Image (cartoon, rainbow, N blue to C red):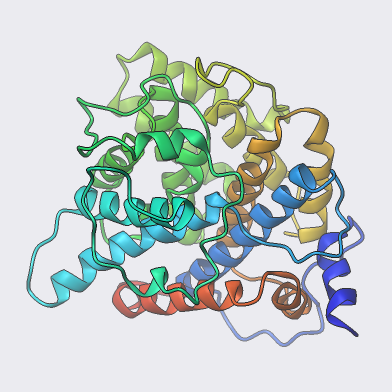
Length: 371
């Protein structure tokens, strides 16, 4: 089978995709480490499929390779910022997580624009910034994220960037916070919020990102989807019961079982963009109706959303949905792994593997079997 044939399999996945091979041997309980790897890989393929459907002639079939977009790029850069914090800690030094993630996001900005924003810090480059790393492709990055990072000073909860921005790229990049082991919900939500306000200042954005991170954390621990969603929503309701806008966001997300559709919404600067809470609700609904974790079903679901959402939001929807599927199921189907490696731009799967290896070096001792 040629690389192009395999690429067609990935790009034209259909709902007849059988999912995991039942004849493959069972190697025991799925571990949290398995789920972390699957989250990264499935999120990347969801992102790439969403981008393919939305930006490349609205088709699932193409002769060009699949490639991740800003959603996976930013997720990996945020994880690299958190990795740097863990590396400093291992050497006995402290580093401020929000500031280190901000510097990592500035490195992502450089990968898109060729240089750091004017009058901002110029952090030292790391492995993920190497010239031979295939992450620097500019693939319609969210202008909200770019503009937020152009502030000369780091944005804070009381000094946010883009106060009305509601785009869901704030959600898709929260992956690393969900994967931090051995921290409580309060700290996890606080770290997510401090990361979101670097680019998005709205309640919709940070609450949606926090819900996503808490759900992903529960799935990585082996919880089922409904329980994970319930626990995440209930925690935020109890902690922020007096905030009316927050309650409205949580109510929107809780309607995922009604199979919500995407529709443009409330971003003052980008009125055609779909709000983050609606994108997350749609992603949860797609996961709930894909019990086998089939990448083919995911491809069809994204293609069906073409008429509902602006192009910018489909890759984000694919990224979020793919991450949730990977965390829930704990595997990338064996028969899709080789196709994915042939289909993605050369080297991108290797970057995902390298990130997983580096991340698990610090976190795996605190992880265990989840079943």
